[in-house]
Structure formats: structure tokens, C-alpha cells
Length: 54
Image (cartoon, rainbow, N blue to C red; front, side, top):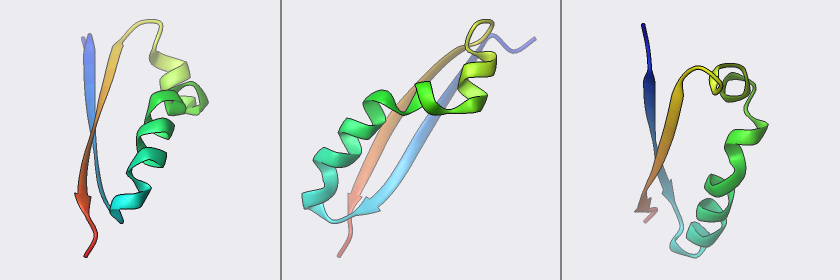
């Protein structure tokens, strides 16, 4: 049985877009249908890794 899921988002983006990505990462889960379906029975965590787009 799956009890926990961790998702790492890897983004390559211009440095000036980092604040937007961090803000969206903070609330995106509540709009994700998969998260909303399984979050009551599975612990879901996320992290955000960003790399500057050159």
C-alpha cells in the first residue's frame, strides 16, 4: 500500500521568474485533481528545484 508520495518539480527558467514559481508552488496542489483525489489517504509532499535558464 502506498502511504507517501514525494514529487520534485525541476524547472529551468529565467532567474526573474523564480518568485512566481515559488508562489505558484505554494498553492498549486489544491487545484490538482490527482492531489485532491488521493490526499485524504496518501501523504503527498512536493519540492521545487530551479535552474537558471541561460
